[in-house]
Length: 215
Image (cartoon, rainbow, N blue to C red; front, side, top):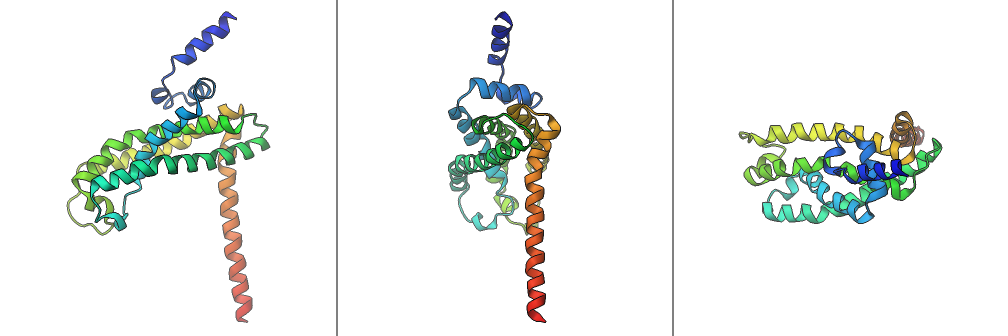
């Protein structure tokens, strides 16, 4: 009983915003056992502001809008895109995790995967600076003028966040499903491989039909 109380107290000291970077499994267990769906939605709403801001790169269709209006749109779109994207990813991870004897519930996967939004929070200040100081260089793919200093930091951080998200996602799925990292890796990437194979088969099928129709 004392060991259980000590473990519970240790979990309560976890700060998800810091621990997810280096301790994804510990943070996931804390998230599953101590936090609500509402907290997960809050993480998605905040973190996906960084995602939507980074998606503005080469979006010339919105270049004529005020930066404040674009920011407002990003803030509104963030929770919608975050919830939909995470809900879909959680469904895939839940279904394919069962193939590897995973024991996590859909709720566990959703709450755990909401943690992947945290790294994107670091993108927010740099993309905001980029948006307000040089929106043309951010959204115009043909921009030829001098680039602001913030672009290099924003792009570098985007690459780091993208890579780190892939790493921590494997740990999150492994912990939520109580499976090994390798099984979690295949749970995450098998659906993508199958989708690519399906797309290739569809392209080949339509090409074959076109060739046969032309002969």
